[in-house]
Image (tube, rainbow, N blue to C red; front, top):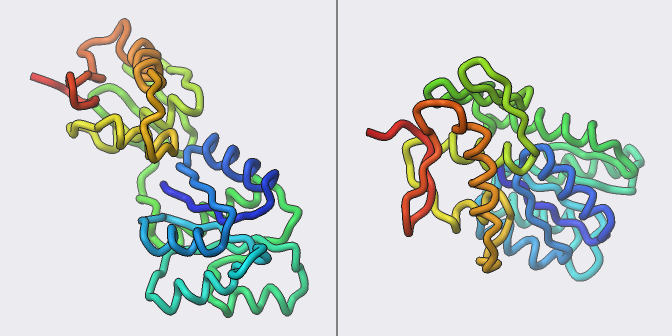
Length: 226
C-alpha cells in the first residue's frame, strides 16, 4: 500500500514515515504543497496524509480542493494543529475523509488509516497470503512454513509480502526499490541482494521445494517452479 505524506514539519514527517514503513506501508514524503499536489495528481496512491497548515503557496485544504475538483478520489487524512469543531467540519466538508488533530498517537493514526482503507475498499479483504506451504498473515504479521513459525524483521516482511502478492511473476529490482525501500532511483548498493539472501535463508533453508528464486539479469520470483 502506497501512502503519500505531505508534511512540512521535518520531525513529524520522519515520525510518520518511519511508523508507516514499520507497519508495512510504502511511504513517500513531500514537504512542499505544490510539489505534493503534483505527486498526488500524477502517481497512484492508496492514501494520502496531508498537513492542514503547510507553509508556502498551497495549504492542505487547497491541495484537497484541487484534487477533488480534478476527480481524484484517493482517501485523504488531514493532520492539523487546528482542533476546533469549526476547523474539523471545514476540513471534512472540504473533501477530507478523516481529520486528526496534533499531537496524536501513532496507534490512533494507524487505526484510522485501516478504517479508511476498509471503508473505501482499497485494502483487499484478505488476511492471509499463501504460496505452497508458506503462509503470510497480514493482520498478525506472522509467517510460517510447514507449520513452523518464521521470525522476520519489518523490512523482510514487507519484501516477502510484496513478492508473495506477485507470486508467479518476475519482480524487478526497480519494482522492489520503489515498493519496499521507497527509492525512485538505483542507490547502486547491494541492499536488495543482502535482504533477498537473508529472506531466502529464513523461508527456504531446511524446507523443500525452494520458493524464492533469482531470475538472472531480471529480478526475483516467489512460487513453485518446474
